[in-house]
Length: 121
Ligand code: 5GP
Image 1: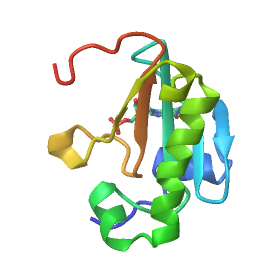
Image 2: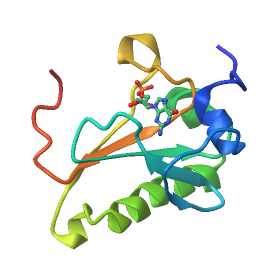
Image 3: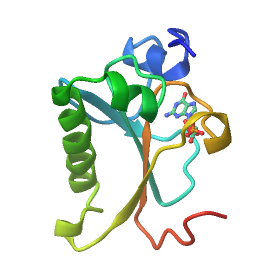
């Protein structure tokens, strides 16, 4: 499946619709999920046009890959859920239909601020 320029996260990246921003750099944008499933529910997305983690893994540059992982850690620190703040969190990416992905722009969910519970329900 090709990248859909009209997906909601593409619109957020183009500032066409607002988000509650947590962090932004050259490689990533992070913002709070509009429908939080835990006390803290953040999203971290690459700025590049990647549909899902498979697309990203095959086509992103090494700098983009490092930037996304670094971005996740930076956001976790900002939110005080990272290990070095004495806490922890779950990072999760849904991939395509069987994985439950709804928005076709790669994103990692960061859940925290409480015990996040069973991995799959
Ligand atoms: P997925 O099911 O694709 O892994 O997750 C998509 C996530 O995007 C959902 O948790 C949903 O609540 C969130 N979401 C959908 N539309 C918006 C939006 O317009 N703004 C924000 N901040 N989150 C959104």
